[in-house]
Image (cartoon, helix red, strand yellow):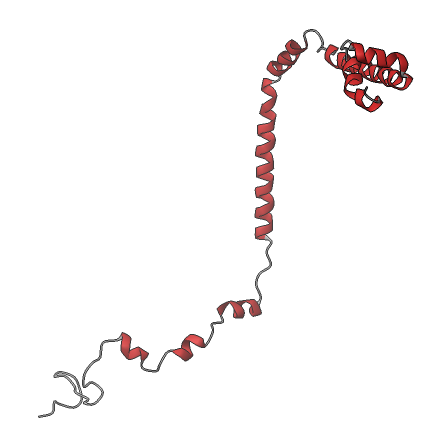
Length: 158
């Protein structure tokens, strides 16, 4: 014979509408605790069933979808004002940006000096003969000062 804790599944099944088995029915006749548990579970099941029926019974109002669709079709032209509002807001933002751009303070001499400053590193790293690397050498020009014919001054060496 089962104790009261062994009938928990049967109590739940009977509370949900299943007919009790003969062994469980005989136990219910002699055990007031299990009978009270079955009664409480049936009350809870009835409350759940009632709440479920109330939720399911809620229907949308008659002609509700038709009204919604009529409103949607009637408001098709209301989107035009959104376009104008968007265009005006963009124009306002541009005007504000232009106003801020034109009202910039003019840079003073210190700022100009800083903007033209260059690091001396490049000048220090370049060797003194770097100019000779980028130009074509003119041979004997510095050693012999030769004047061409027709120039005023010295004549050619013989």
